[in-house]
Image (cartoon, rainbow, N blue to C red; front, side, top):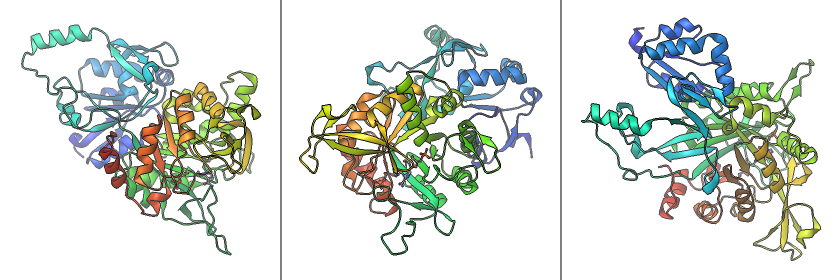
Length: 499
Ligand code: 1PR
């Protein structure tokens, strides 16, 4: 093929580069992978989709000689597109894992966002771009929401001075966009479609859906409820406007996911056609297989990332980690949460909480944080706490959702997927008391989940709580309400969404 249709890609092996690969192929280009530093020097067009954490990336670039080649390539002024960390690495240093020294090609540093003023960090979701300078490749982008997922941002030094000089040298450059004059104006609330996946009794991977986590039919055979094929449904939800798609491998707690190749296949096929972020959860923990081979949770997560996941989600293992942390007050650095977020960044690690409501007469009856409930309990109880469970709701643990959320935030979770067993599959609305409790307790984004049965439930949870996203399953699987209708309703209610 002619070199015009070839793009050189620098993939140093951390995180999901699959989505960029799929996008490049989708646009009709071939990819040449960088194997040696020479490949960088010989490139005619280089894309560096940086994913993961800054320190780890710099280590790899330095060890492989890629750092030096990158500097030489960019100094020659050859076409270079650095995406996310791939751009940040060009700066002098980063606060992430550090300070760590960067490539030093652009004056300035990379710093963490400030989470005071109620701004949630990581910054996750579809936000607006303010394009104040004329830049060919960003033309028209200002009208749309674009996806962000990061805790750090580059802060070029001498920005004002540079732009004065630029205007002096290039007086024709116009400000093409005034802030706020496009359609997209701020961070959009997300609508997420969730696919609970497991093998049915015949061994086929199916999308299933529970009623308070019970996924079996109410028949004599008690077969696993089958709502469709994972790849097809994910594709449909993407077309319908889902802002993200989540897969939960719901038997991952007992079946080892790397033995579960179909799930990895599902991710691979899905990421070829679905260009919104994919999250996958289930079974992320240390594991020893039947042959005695030990896998770390980091290896399990890496396999999910390589197969196309943008984020992974940890359930049971995060509960044990939080319990241990609260008991000892020590961060060991060894939990799956800490290890995966250190390598892939906090923004790539979601903690999925599966709480069950426990009513109490008085807040002092339990050592856990309680809320005053909007609807009284069966014996007139005015309070409840939310007990965390493991193994798909099968076992209750001595920790509340509030305590867990705060602990996992400290251990490095970047986002919380907040389910509620009582509401799951009931279609009666989200547990607003719970979502409010948790989204007020942490400064990372919280995804409300379980119970959506009508568009009004989405607007209710966004109006009454600080949730950043709302996730639903049954309402979409059963085709009761299309995603587009939910979004139109949110727009009508004055809630910003990506259209
Ligand atoms: O513990 O790390 O292996 O992770 C297991 C993962 O699988 C967890 O994220 C856990 O939430 C999930 N899971 C386990 N068992 C079930 C089950 O249903 N039997 N599903 C399960 C979780 C809840 C949501 C559901 C919402 C929305 N299901 O995923 O999609 O409740 O449903 P709705 O809109 O129909 O009400 P680990």
